[in-house]
Length: 351
Image (cartoon, rainbow, N blue to C red; front, side, top):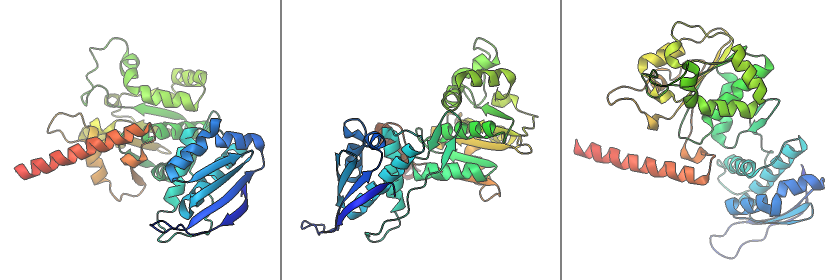
């Protein structure tokens, strides 16, 4: 245990609903790590209090935690995990605290009764390159990273802000650095499903670059900028417009298709059949954001149905609860989903 327990009692709360209460003190051996763990002006502890409805009071390198027994044990596991992250040379930002809290809460989802027994420490799937290590911040991100590790073809689908594209690029960068693949191929339907790019100035790379910017941003996060530039120049990182991939075999490559909801059925089948020996393919998209002309079936939606249960294929479906951007993004997604559900119900009644 990274934090040493000094005291624990379990009095009963008098106000309904009656729940077990818990109080303990965690002491962390390294003062500098403890300071980073608590955050500037104890902001990390304040987030812990807000999310878990506990009381967390720091004094020196110790923190006293009080509250509901389940919530306080969740706080303990989150702090233990984050302290271990600091010990391993990592950093702790507010987003990391948010992720640790989510994972700690998820670990208790199957509990039927509160318990005073301490559960196993948090374990979160990670993606590591020389520049950066990313740990899963939600249970679904954890499942996504584990799916990337075991499957040749992975679909990551769901709303914006869930990390599906960012983690896909990070995993591809990890494979490239480790020598597991020889190159990374990035593809995305540009402008619209037909990819009519002729009116844009510049060569093909310049035409599609604006639409691939999220992929570039993730690459620069995971790899030094000069290394990314050299890899692009050498063709180790390739920008391949979807319409130009026909007839190719992508062996020894990590291939990412982003915004896949805007592929047609034919485009998706063409893309999926490019997978070559020792290749990995990651397809990301949001079926609720389809920009295809009315009446044109989304290749992503069709592929999710057709490939259900196929060996070597994993599908990870993110929800609004998995949004890891600003909390407002999750609320926006939920609002749009609610409106969409109302419209669907209205259309059904009108038939």
